[in-house]
Length: 122
Length: 122
DNA sequence: CCCAACTACCTTGCATTACAATATAGCTGC
DNA sequence: GCAGCTATATTGTAATGCAAGGTAGTTGGG
Image (cartoon, rainbow over all chains, first blue to last red; front, side):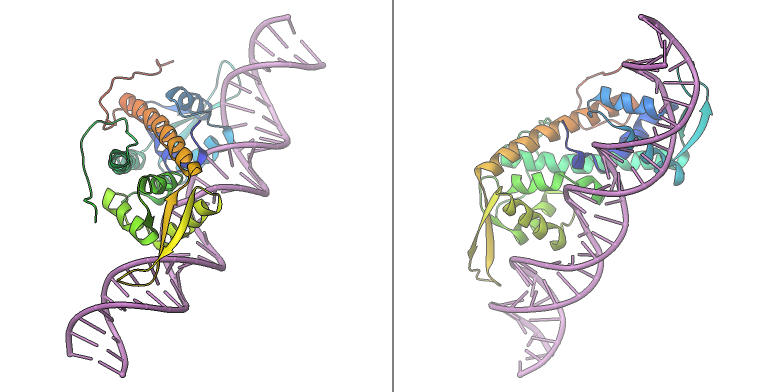
């Protein structure tokens, strides 16, 4: 189970990624994230997050009826959302590279197998 | 520059990793992290973090004089710290894999080139 | 001699964000 | 009717990175 603190900041970008290309609703997003391997993402996490994104204009919502339950609120990426998603990818890669380098030197073995030696001891 | 929220949870494990194998002091750790590609890690971040780790027994400190400035407080991993470091590596890999899968499907292109298709559309 | 700049440590308070807990509501099948 | 699933929402709490500010030692320039 991934610790909650490690999801901070990452989860928001991942939600944008899930919305990339297709409109989806909150409950569905939560299920999907679980499918990708982030653990369970509870309602108390996903709905405030979506409201946040909507409020700042990264996504827009539209209600539609459902055959199996209450109304659904579908979200779609805006242009701003697209930009933020690209930003997220850049930042994530930056972080992942830093951790990879660190793991390489400390023997942690990341999942990447490049040899990016950084830092020569003092 | 990596957003501060994205470092949450990760930074702590990375400090443990930096201490793996060799004793180091706060200021040095901060510099080293910058060298690995995490941006600048300010004192207001690093010192409280080290105190936290020390308080719960993941690291132990010992003072030593320095030739170029005030006394230095060197930290070393304890057995608990070793275990926590291993835990961190596991969790980080779990998260990285989830993000990789997500990026694969949404066209974000992670730095890993495996084909781990997850989730078939509804 | 003083002051800037660097090393090196520390603390207080703030902002962000994941999540537990809880509530509401519609649908399905027993 | 009631359990269980779908689906949305809110309130409050905990964790943690960081800005801002403080202390102290050393070194070199003017």
